[in-house]
Image 1 (cartoon, rainbow, N blue to C red):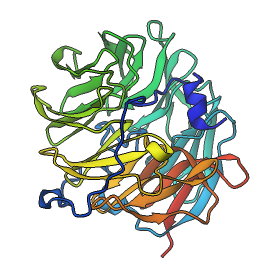
Image 2 (cartoon, rainbow, N blue to C red):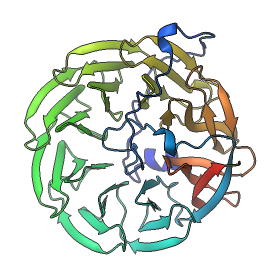
Image 3 (cartoon, rainbow, N blue to C red):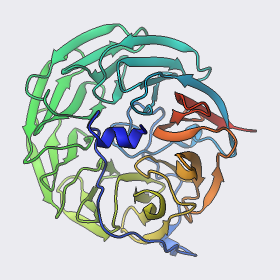
Length: 402
């Protein structure tokens, strides 16, 4: 069973993004408007990839020093074991952390691929890293592990949340955020003590974004919420016309959200006031970098990635170059976009697009690696989850050929 099939059938409810929306575009903009020029200084990303969305702001943005230039080559693979789903690697402190979505958490040296430690625990979520702690939902509990050794630091029972954990998890230096049932629950990273809990109108699957002491999160109740990160008190909410199950991104004072009304919404981070709104059809992911917002979704013939200016929402281009793969995985840099592209009959390959035009500039055609899991870009390398040419679940590292 591939990763997407496993997630949809309920093995771990990680969410499918804002799927099921109508419409997509196959048109490309031959020459983007002048205002679509890339600004290499407008990069909200930070070094490392400590959560599945690249960090606590969910921008999936890659700093220049961490961005490997194609062509790329396969450097190493590490077998995670299991058969349920391809790994979603995160990278921090020179280490790659991943699970087999069954009963193991692994730590691997990012440069060499050498195995550092393995912990056997039930896996019910992705992982997130903050400081020297790794956080994971495991068997109706939130666990903190020491990143150096894998030793348990603390465990907190999720009495209110346990029947329905979304699988999304986010962490900052002092706080861990998870969703369960109708609640956004927040815990202290040092002690595991629950700080506060916020109730939404319906179940929520998206990963919260945290910036400047505010938590931004979307819900199936169609709202985007801004909450005080210390108290959980609501600062504002914004109404859309569909579920907001995509991860929200926040950058340069603007919140970006995709909803099942088929639009990307750009909101003032302080007030929640709408700055712009653009229809894109299917949205499963949002990334922000270089003064652009990228919104993508779909599969195969219906996969489309759209680019807009972050400030005004000017349409720059739409691309279905080479039939993009599962576009709920992406990493953006001002001079390249990393994502899966359709290549194998039973899987996708790692690809790179131009952020100026949306055209493909490189695709992995030699490693045999089938890209079906998560993606992280850090330390001048790309780390992806999927199957190797023997159909074994692995984390793989790609580095520049030259």
